[in-house]
Amino acid sequence: MASALLNTGRRCPTGRHIMDPGWDVCPYCEGEKRSSEKTAFRSPEPVLSSNVRKTTIGDSIPIGNRETKPFPQQTPSPHIEAYGGRGDKRRIRGILITYTWHPQGDLFPIREGKNYIGAGTVNREPGDPQCEIYITDDPKLSSAHALILCRQGKFEIIDLESTNGTFINDEMIPIRGEDLPDTANLRTGSTIWSFMKVITPDNLPSGAIVQADKPAKAAQTTPPPEPPDKPTIVL
Image 1 (cartoon, rainbow, N blue to C red):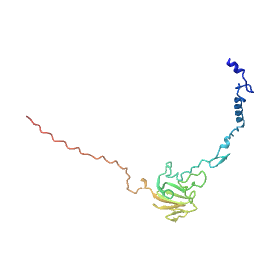
Image 2: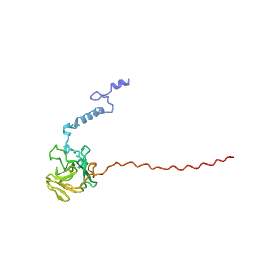
Image 3: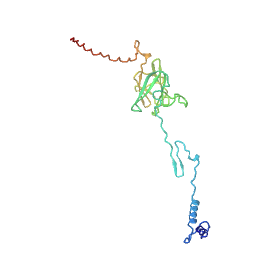
Image 4: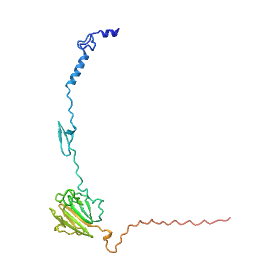
């Protein structure tokens, strides 16, 4: 009987909800109305295409009130080619050392044949091989600044028509080149070098013998003397 009274009670204007006798307005209908109004006035968020979001390294592209910051570029190490790399099979005949750009110093091998000093490629053209002694910190160093030539144990240094010249012991060398003595001080651009020859087995003085260090012999210990035999007592 209770369900029959509910079915015959007063309903809202839409006829979908049963009204309480004390209600003047159907709260269910009012709630649905407010919900529909909020949905109608809500503006959809803009969807940006993938092309707009793309940025290139080093650029900054604003998007609305937002700004996409570029990813910081990393500066390569200026002495990435230090020590000449182990791929070069030529024999090392000398070394160049500089303390101009790093307090701990930088060391470069001087090998048989040609050894280019510079801040770029050997022939100053893109695609050419990089200088063996490669420095990018020195603004006064030319792309291919100087050449150290090692032939039959003798060293020559040739200036490759550089802008600021090449110096041995504070004296500028001619373009035709000059002998490079052992323990000489060089200057290319603002970089100061110390050059030293390396003595290898094939250029040792006559009669010199190179032997590998032999392992030290283990110290021999003398065993302690045996105690004397005890006298035998016969009863």
